[in-house]
Image 1 (cartoon, helix red, strand yellow):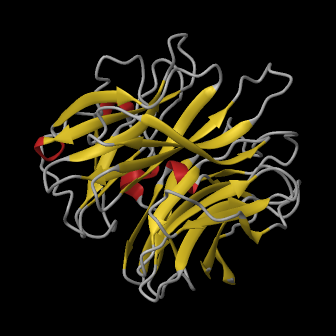
Image 2: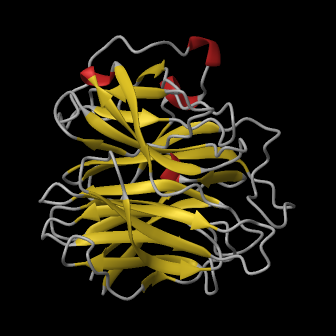
Length: 342
């Protein structure tokens, strides 16, 4: 395996995290990675070392050379969300236009959660929004940016919503139509879990079937608590789902990222929060019907406060995965990436 690690964003005193909640967009060797920028609080043990009493911001960084060097962008249009400014969408999004991107911003995970969205028509240089994501009869919407285009005017939105008890979380899918003006709930992905199944990552096979991998974890009060990456298949564009397989199993849950390489291999990356902590990858030569063994891109993590990968393909056949990371429990939280090929 070939692998090179690079730094996307690293600033003293800052907590930088959770690319999985924000997004990745690429055009050949140009890549944009979204993340959260907050204030580091080293005294928090265990948990995320971010000071939630201080403001945090939606940020992004851009590379023009295949991920080797990066420029930080403050992105003032999306840095903070004015809830009073959230409005119904009145524009039109072409989901097949490579210059047009959409970014969902999750605000909460329990009942009452909202996830407004923004769009850009200039490769994420400027953003327009925030626009309302309708709740579609649900008690809340926790949508990271996971959109699967179906046509120029239609796409599937994969997200999580509260369970019947109002707590996080259950994976679901909705259809976006009329260029972003209409959202229709399609289905839950799997049965309601005792713990949670959240943060779906999606891929559409050549035969039209849709593969989704979920982050699944048992209840926190379960003495035998475990976690899994759980794969489901839909044969009808998201209207129904069937359990397919457990792609990996461990103690601490982690969100997945999926992308197809330019040479036709499906890659899966995820933070690995068991020891030794790091970043893991699996690869499939048959569009996710079978998966390779787990390979570690790195295993020098300092704690479980890492991962939340995003993944995209590079023109030369290699893959690029971004994540937040630390190499010491009390150290900073930075946005790093690995450029690799198996």
